[in-house]
Amino acid sequence: MGHTPANDKPRRTRDPEAHRAAILDAARACFTERGYARGTIRDIASRAGVTHGLVMRHFSSKEQLFVAAMPGPRDLADVVAGDPATLPERLALAFVERLDGAGGSDPLIALIRSTASNEEAATALYREMRQRSADAYRAVLDGLDVDVRIELLIAHLIGVTFSRHVIGVGPLAELPADRLVAQLARSVRQILFDQDVAPGSQAAGQDSGR
Amino acid sequence: MGHTPANDKPRRTRDPEAHRAAILDAARACFTERGYARGTIRDIASRAGVTHGLVMRHFSSKEQLFVAAMPGPRDLADVVAGDPATLPERLALAFVERLDGAGGSDPLIALIRSTASNEEAATALYREMRQRSADAYRAVLDGLDVDVRIELLIAHLIGVTFSRHVIGVGPLAELPADRLVAQLARSVRQILFDQDVAPGSQAAGQDSGR
Image 1 (cartoon, each protein chain N blue to C red):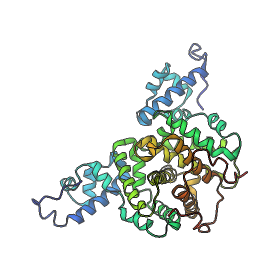
Image 2: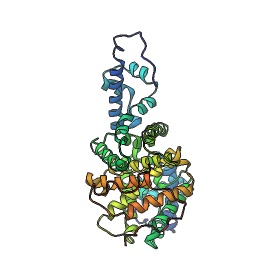
Image 3: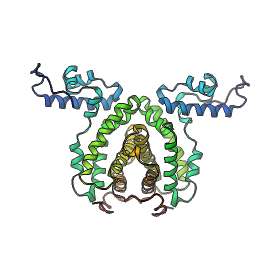
């Protein structure tokens, strides 16, 4: 992960943290706008107001930069912290506000768009997102199958993002935010908290709707 | 869609239905293996053992062919037909068997991979898939929000496909088929049959799991 800035150009590295933050902001904007394949280090450096070389000193490859530019684990940890009983509602609200407010520019969208152009980068990004999510959720969830639940939750959110924000037309794209939040809160609750059962043992549970 | 084969080359159009089926099979294999951008009409014609011109007489564009090459609505209608009480289990089983048996080659995977290279083609394909699904489900489901439920269901399955089959590593990719079927049956039941509620009115429902 990212070399420590060398000492040979002190004027450029006086505030390495600020440079790093500017590069990450620029990378986030560039990758979500242009996708992984068409987002270039040169464009990112230019948006961040630094040199190509400085970007490469902070991040050893475009793929590393792509992965590092994802939203911080602190955001998710803040949402997850608190009463587990209301976690689904908090999570659904935070997700809808984040994606609806992103104006088509969010790392989850970049992840989906990157699969065709570069599956390795997409896999690296997905792994990093899963790891960060797992760390946050494990603080409040337990059980043997917590890893599977977390990944099913991520998959559910990816699917909704795909339909609402990547395809962007149809019933799910047009659903008012409050109705999506209500529906997502229920799916999140089911995925995170429903007891695992032996296959087939719950074949005819709830009301069938007709 | 597609023009009726012209009469000027009777030896080529003697069995237009067989040619059409061969072209669709070839397109399905080609697009899922190579993605939308790199799948060419020439390759598809060659796999189907027909000329480039014949492909274009059946399908007026690559995008039309891409959309037409999706799995037939009859497959889904067969799964959906029957007792709605066990629809989630039948659907979950059919989905897992289909995707796990596809060896990485399925139109849902092609859809996800096509978003980066050609968002218009992906949108056209998504619309067609949604329409076919809606037609099948409307035969057994009702309610004002059935369109939203159907699209949430598609989104859920896309998310699982993304993680298990496109990324293909991690807890969801490694989950045994029977456990995935059990989990999916529960999410499908929740998405299709859970009553819609006013936002916030069901904030602390089931057991929270800790």
